[in-house]
Image (tube, rainbow, N blue to C red; front, side, top):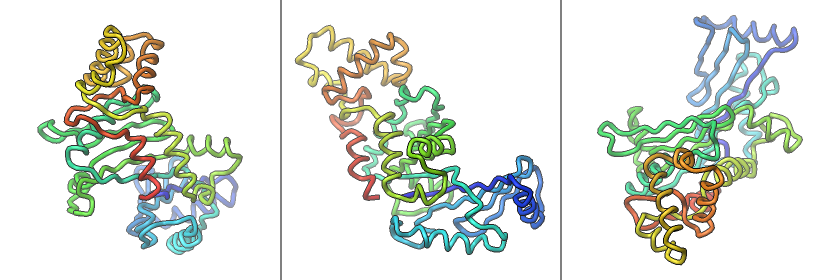
Length: 311
């Protein structure tokens, strides 16, 4: 289900501008932005220069005080949020959806956590426009988080407990929890609406099937590569049935990925050759990204597909 949601009101008619100005008049503001915490999980932002209002709801499960949010909880969510914004004299009917955040939490060992963070640091080729940032701990011995930022969506992975500790929160519930976030922005929501002939109203995205659609289409099908993860020795073993010269080329490609990432390694080859090598590996259920600390790790596709519906 949706974890966080952003709703936006843009005045278009005279009545809309009257409503916008009446809300703005209740606040002292500087530098073209008003930020108001309506509730622990609800934040109001008024952008005075571009004249629009946003309501951000964080951690919907906690906001509704539920263990799990289901398709049937939409009415409760709308009712509760409308009660919070009632003093503004504005209704959710005035807002359209401009962003949703989805998440999957995976419980891993510390070693697995590092290996999967490392794997995410090597991905990029299928989305050239995404800007990647990899953050390490103070002595650069461990990866703490990997972020891919784009105009249509973001992909974030990190150690959830470590992130909370940096905010001064020590929650043992999140020990060794690998958090995977998809932040779907307005352009991607619009593309979804165009594809399925719907509108950017929250009710049209309040469904587990929509969540699965974005995970499958943006992450599993277009970002992650097929195959399980092996170290160099085991890749050698998996390639024993092909001629030695081809083995050496595939291994060299995998080594280049380990040194940089899939995009940079592919630049050393023609696009056709890089695609051929990736196809050769993935058809043998070998992921192009080699691992370091293990002989074998299950592919992220498999893990996410198995656990995303249950989290």
